[in-house]
Image 1 (cartoon, one colour):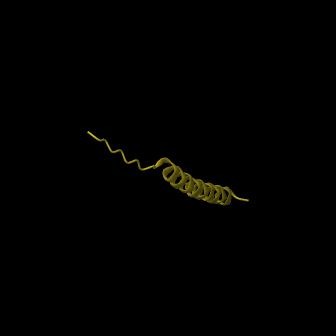
Image 2 (cartoon, one colour):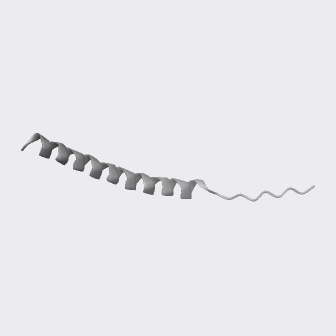
Image 3 (cartoon, rainbow, N blue to C red):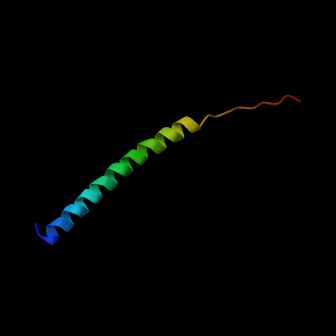
Length: 46
């Protein structure tokens, strides 16, 4: 294997890993946002 093919392979591996991390982060953020939003209604009688 030449240096160019090793460099290209490493670039592809890094790009795929970045894509996987981004998709996981998207799902984690959506899950967090769904669980952290609880609307509360407060009524005060005077």
